Amino acid sequence: MRLKTRNFILFPGDKLPDIIDDPVELINKIIRKVTINAQDTNLNSTFPWINLAEQTLERYSGFDEKLIVGLKYNLAAVLNVKQDYNRAKELLDDSIKTLSGQSKINKKKLSICYFYMAMTLRGLHDYENARIHILYAMEHYKNRCGFHCEYAIILFKLNNIKEAEDNFKKALTISTTTKGKTHPSTAIIMFNYGGFLASIGETNKARKNMNNAYLSFRNSNGENHLYSARMSGHISNFLYMEKKYAEGLENMKIAYSKTKKILGDDNMETMIYKNNCARLLIKLKKYSDAVEYLDKPIIITDQKEKMILLAYNETIMTAPEMYILKKGNSVFKILKIMEGKNIPIVKNNILKKDIMNYRNQFKPISKEYWEFTATILVKEYKLSAFL
Image (tube, rainbow, N blue to C red; front, side, top):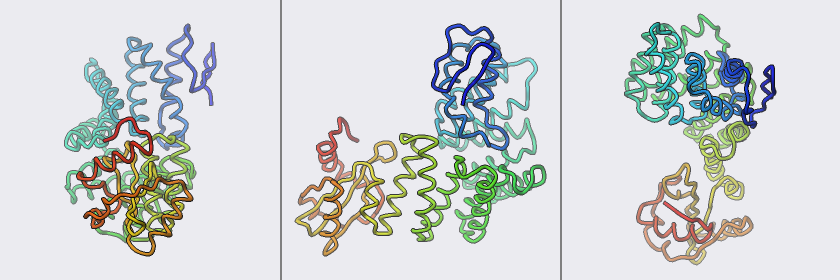
């Protein structure tokens, strides 16, 4: 994977050369490297170029306005996919300001910027402003299937169920008519519509839409595509709600392994999928396998009669979460498993208190136990700060 110009060759991890004879050629080639095309087929390969794109923006911020704004909003689109919403918003604010201030406004480009901004604001949970921006996009560039799909998602977040469903259907109609039933864009819309149907209780329709969309997208774009991984993760969540844990685990492992390969270990999405694998394994009572997917797991036990297993990932959790809570004969067996995994086991009489009545599995522990668990985690995992 490389970027070749007339004067030099660059790889994603490189730094820009000190002397560049033709910045226009470089910027155009960088734009192509970070552009997600209509079929999303090059999505995975865009991520390594983000750093080089940022270097280019920093050096040529005052260069050709049209070129730089194109680089900004295309980079923002990729950052949206990576869920780096704050940086994407910064770039889109600049792009919208620049495009709106031009004497001859390019409505198509401006509408795309509004569309990306709507996605960004939705990612930041600012749904009302997201709605305003997607309406701007639709005003400037009508009958885009993606715009109607985004509008439907935002409307659903705002609890406008009827209008949301109308826009999902309109998005599907436009995409099917203009691009075809098997096009990746159609599959993505169908999948989102399936998620919507599941949320309003239309279980059978939801499953049909989601499965068909996943198979269609995977067949056209491959199982290693990020959206294929995400679809697998969403289907797993759906199966979890149906208590089909084994089937859900199979899908979640796919989502985790593929996302880890594409986005890396330290990506929030990767961490969530990893944590979900642990939950499913615990539901299947495969405790030995489950702890392999947990961050900072710890056992607290009281004379081997009662035990809880907590875990903590500061990126995706507000506080340690409860994973296993057991009393009676099964405790000794589980403790032996955890000893073999070198999981810290702490004996403390806190388990004689009402923490044993805490039944919100996979939820943050109550505030009253934060200080206690913080002390243990700091000691066992040598944390410099906590909570």
